[in-house]
Amino acid sequence: MYQTVKMTINGRAREIPVDIRESLAELLRRLGFTSVKQGCQVGECGACTVLVDGHAVTSCLYLAVWAEGKSVLTVEGLRGDNGELHPVQQAFIDEAAVQCGFCTPGLIMTAVEIVGRGIPYTREELRRLISGHLCRCTGYENILNAIEKALRQANG
Ligand code: FES
Ligand code: FES
Image (cartoon, rainbow, N blue to C red; front, side, top):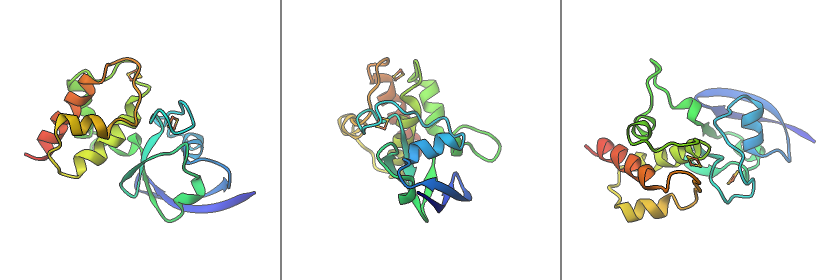
């Protein structure tokens, strides 16, 4: 059964027919937003994380129809008007926080929400805040360095 859903994706208003059983992750990938990774598909790895109305959600567990009237942001929507990277993306590059990259888009979206709060979290708090993300490569330290760096920049 299909339903037409109105939502905004990366700033662009869309009206999209979706299978009512389709996850937001499946929909976003079908539309070409391939930054959204489908790892476990059961809410365990965080690779599929996107922002819905500014909040990080695991889009594999979030039905596309639930996004009716909402604003969805993926990594593709982070670039500035002149193509510049988001400060969180730049911090991940600067701190070598990426190896294979599979976990990276989800972590970046969670980090964008964290940094956007303007709260000077401690490293231990950041560690807990990203605990919903699995990374098989980096050991997490450089990821935490990157988020700390973006947080420092955002908080002056
Ligand atoms: S693919 Fe969604 S949490 Fe793993
Ligand atoms: S960089 Fe490979 S899983 Fe995180």
